[in-house]
Length: 255
View 1 (cartoon, rainbow, N blue to C red):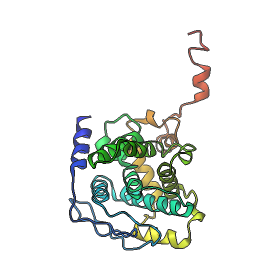
View 2: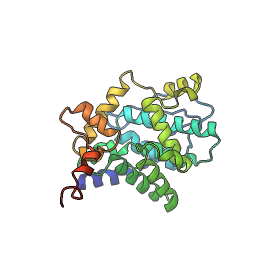
View 3: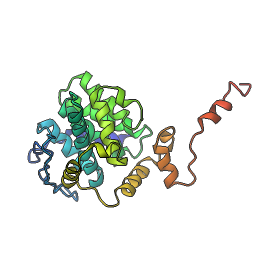
View 4: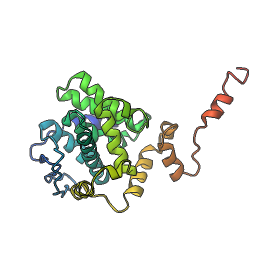
């Protein structure tokens, strides 16, 4: 726990001066640190604007330094899908908050949470909330981002909440399983992928990252689609059977 807290505190304290994101989903190169390669995205999507503020630059820097390139590019695409969806539906949302939510939605999969036994979504939500508080964002807005991230893998709930929660879940589902794929034009899909490239083996790479981050806390995947990932990667993993839990509970077993 101490290691995770130290890493999270160090990441959230980072401030960047030289990195920038252009206003039209066009990523300017981020100065690399260590072995992390900078994004070389140059494509532009006219309908979507990535807010260029200190907070969004700080968020991008933290995620760029903490996540693999595969997760970082995925998070950037999630923002684009979410923002495009919001524009198409005529929804009102704060682009800065949506961007931070997209950046942090998989943060709980990073190495700093190697000893966590919370759901990874909660780890990411906690980090995003701390980040927003550190940037002077109101408690209400910080909590709304927390809930959006915490629920983004729980199907059937987010679409009935406020726009940021609904759009984050939609953006993530679009990028992972192609939910709503044909609601985006070919030009939009091509532009997003040109800006934030999707590796040919993205599915297997992402599944492996999920497994590597969750194999020490398999209990947190029960009752979610992440249990499918555990079963795919680990033949010895057994999904929890809710029907069996009810039939074998103390209420039916004589207490």
